[in-house]
Length: 305
Ligand SMILES: Cc1cc2nc3c(=O)[nH]c(=O)nc-3n(C[C@H](O)[C@H](O)[C@H](O)COP(=O)(O)OP(=O)(O)OC[C@H]3O[C@@H](n4cnc5c(N)ncnc54)[C@H](O)[C@@H]3O)c2cc1C
Image (tube, rainbow, N blue to C red; front, top):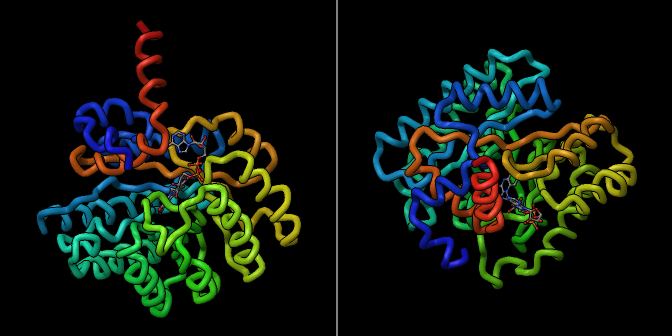
């Protein structure tokens, strides 16, 4: 991460990154989810920003919040229903990236995914930095082996191991393909962005050929177009076998409207926060990805006056 982004005070991070967050309650986030569907024809995947868990009580509250999210989403009409995105580190005070054992995380996710399955709600387990990759893929395999079929995973094209991981995925799993947001060392990952994006296309084609449902998650319009216009026709699959995903707050309105008009399903990752302290890391990563957001927010503020 750019060292400058690292030292911006939390209150300024929160101010500049406001457009990426749907609100500070489940009700506010559900309102956004409903409006995206009604007004723009977009689906959502709902995420509670809850990283850097220090107290067991926080981990328990995150689990509780996700169980409530299952109920809120289950109340939507089936065709409009959001999915839920889960981060394994949200449910443990022993995070693997700090040398812990991830204790409690699997059991919490199992509880959420079981309740979601019983209520017709789909879940995707987000992929965090490389210390979490084995843990997350193991969790997915165990949940799949238990018979849970409401599951999706995330593969990061930057990691060298990803092609092997792709070959070993349980059949039929939904797969969100991303380049990966976590900076990884050159020994284990690509460091060249265009190469990561070329792999988005290669892996998407492979996944479609193997019968997976592909969630192509990128804001790079040129690559999304190549996916839709070249990879999908080559794979010979219909619009029911893939979708395009972007983050809520990233300015791609016109492009998303074009996709919807063309009958292509598009979904936004919609995060909300119950405690801003737990949202700051996610927001710093967004500003690191797109520092110009600080300029855009300032400009809007000045123009509104
Ligand atoms: C739905 C979704 C889910 C994701 N889940 C995960 C996950 O589980 N694990 C993980 O490691 N990563 C995840 N990511 C992040 C992903 O790995 C990339 O870091 C991110 O999408 C940026 O890569 P890009 O392909 O959009 O290309 P980029 O080259 O980074 O971006 C393409 C263009 O979009 C613009 N852009 C990119 N990000 C932003 C932004 N935040 N605000 C404004 N403009 C922006 C860039 O300026 C550039 O012009 C997810 C991304 C999406 C869209």
